[in-house]
Image (cartoon, rainbow, N blue to C red; front, side, top):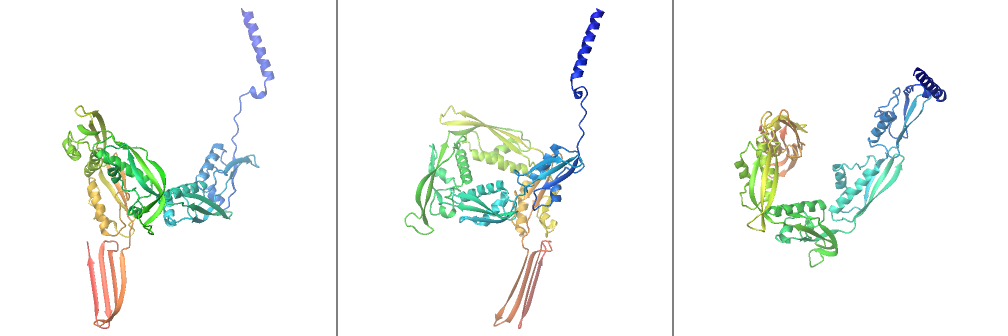
Length: 524
């Protein structure tokens, strides 16, 4: 037994010795950790306009740092997001340094500057309107901006949309780029507007209860071509306006109890050239021959529904009876979908907002059933689930943009004080009073007010943006009359003296026969 174990140990020792003899030395020892290399230098090549130190400001890799391939790739992405460099032609790589380290090199290609921007063949739009739309949609194409081919393609798309909205859906837009210098270009959009296209016919199919005339009457933005609509530009096909009008058609049918009524995808087809405007004589501006379009809208009406059970959940501020009175429908009435929606999402929202519950939401869940007494009608049960939220108080009210008018002048027109329970009606009336001052451009209660809520403290802060307008008037006058002789006059008035909201007017008249002075001051 012992001899067997001794023989086994000798055999294993010999095998291990042979393996050790034939394996390379690196395999017989634990691998030593690789020494971290150091960045010797960071270089920018390919730049023309930008200074190297300005570019390196955005690079995190610095000389003396440990070299990291992942970090230099992140630095490259940071540079590309600046919008100054061509994303395809820019790269980063590393080379051996003279002292055994690594030299990191960012090779960039600067995008040129647009020195000149032109629109050739443009007739239906003003250049100022195009540039304004570019700014609103943040297209990024303007004079002295960086030229980016991606942004230029976006500008082409926006131009086509604008031309289509003016009755030229077949317009073509091509960009032409010319080098002005090594760092700048001239950008020209060559436009072929094509012929004007007008909507001649709007037809509905599948409708049995509602006539085409009734449904067309709900459309206010896109209408059939006529003597009046051609001057209102309502006979021009704009898909956004068409979609808006067709949703109004849906709401109209649902207001009559057809809650499952809806429109399908409209079909648009050309019908050739037709005379539009004045139907008899070809009078200039009143009549023309244009390409015509026919819009066909599929309609699914369904059946009319009457109100069954109405269940209200989640309410505590207003009773179920109060909410039912706001909805204004009783069991057995035709289910007016438009009326129910307005009651829940507009009227009740305002009532809750007047009590400080500005995060009120409502969810309407219908259950459709057949009417056993009338096969042509249905019954709908509604479950209204209300989430009232917390009652909010006004924490801070700040005004932005009143560089001349003092805050107290604006605050005295606001019917809510800081610390009060927020009241939506009082806030809306306060905006009306601020607009009546005449100190600012018209204030929009929705667009110009920024609401910030603190859920934990149940507080809301409001920042209201205002834009001041001219507040002083001065005029000179003079003349010659038989009674007063020659005279000279000066009129001065301001409705916001020193930004205090005070009204001051001064009138001075001086002549060789009479003199007069009038002074008035009003403290609101």
